[in-house]
Image (cartoon, rainbow, N blue to C red; front, side, top):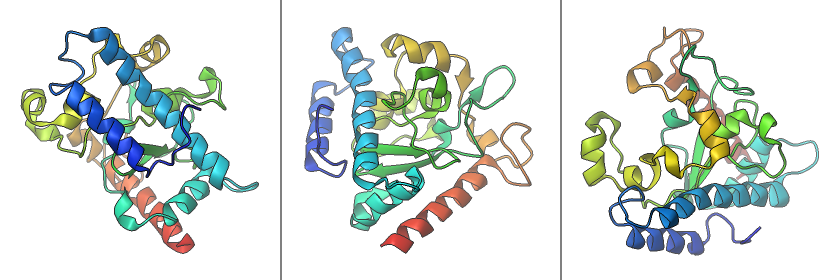
Length: 238
């Protein structure tokens, strides 16, 4: 891989600040569309490297990637990572029938390191990303649709309730991460993700939604339960 720095390294913050300076209005508001496209797609490569870092340094025989990521996080000061960022946008289901992508189980949980570095764990305890050097694309539908991507924004200033117009002015997270036009996506992802959409805030919090609600829980509640179990594992290893 192109860099061996761990996800908590200062290098990643410096890289993000460089992108913020180069694209003050966001990746979707520049005359240099080719550069913006390359910068956007570079995020998936960064996350692929950061998944491999955890696998190579912390994944032991007989253990899961859930346990490997928890072990890595347990070595960091608590202020360097967070389990509090919303995972709603990583719960995409099919537009037509509401079905989840292959290998999606219950929920995908989200962890950020230094905010910029992102990890997504599926419900079976596997790290997922749009690009995975250990999986063929046909094995990685959930990763292609819902996987991690490095975030160039400094913090989560996105407000879903405010709408696109407000966020386009006030949110770097929206301009550098969320509001990415389809023409900037790699073809392999575009072909897959166009058939999926994220749940609205209302659906995400609805216990009775036929696609997202289950056993009297909303998708948000199921995610919080999974995150609590992951946090307990981190604390056990600390």
